[in-house]
Image (tube, rainbow, N blue to C red; front, top):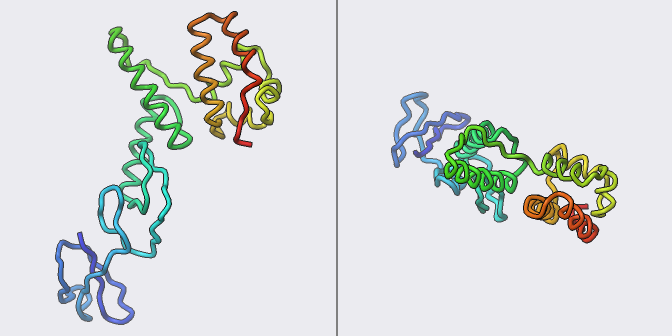
Length: 208
């Protein structure tokens, strides 16, 4: 689809159509409709983008696990937002950023495979946020938010923000949550708790 604009002074009438060359304007009668060169193209669907848009040379996060360099058109953005909202309904969760989206989809698909192998109902699958998982783990370890913050060298406010999903934990804390959940699952609560507490002080958060 190409975009044309009337070449008459002070006439801003535009038209989008499949034509490729200038043609006489039948809407305003001023002059010719001249082909407008796009500012750039959408890096997702390759449709032309018009207007005052400055393409970025830096990677920009785009939901779905891709890092694009450039500009994404409004059509692709709206479609992706709709996809995200559908996934949030299905997973009964809220995504905080691209990494959170990717990680939860990976976890969900793994749970679906497990449920299908066990002939279980996949509609009952829930995917917890890192915030709720951190809160559950902290309570199993019988730690207050302040105690956990002191162990991992962050502020209590950071722990509160993590548990409310108002801020994403660092990679180190995410890895600690995953490994700790695995420890509790495979070696039991009592031995698992002792091992987690032994290694907890070594965890150092880099988000501060």
